[in-house]
Length: 127
Image 1 (tube, rainbow, N blue to C red):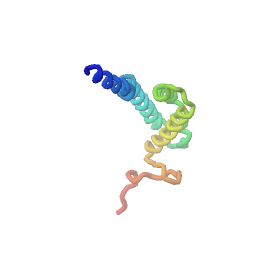
Image 2 (image 1 turned 45 degrees about the vertical axis):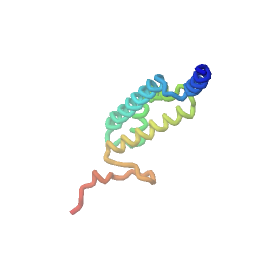
Image 3 (image 1 turned 180 degrees about the horizontal axis):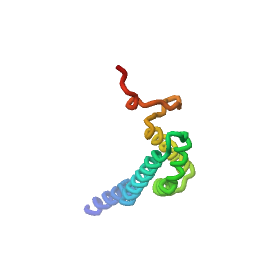
Image 4 (image 1 turned 90 degrees about the vertical axis):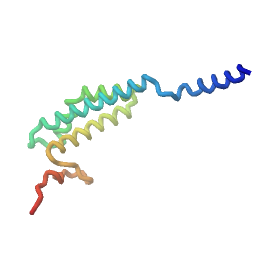
């Protein structure tokens, strides 16, 4: 009788083994988060380096290029299978975020039609 009970329980436990959270997944998630934060910090810092005379898209591209090392570390952490689509997506996200930080540093925001506009917080109230 005891064997009849142990065998089904053992089969159930081993069948579910792959569904449990693994320690290496947690380590990978921590590494992705750290890499993501390092990349964004770099982009934020580089976004304020430019002068107002520099075109925002040029400054964003320069910032993304200057943060290439951080972007590469993010790609390595988030894309262990080296999928080219994932790599391209992360690089595109880096360019997008670089532009976002450049516009924020200048008190601008991107509108829905792609035009730069003054943000509501930077416009003094009219009396």
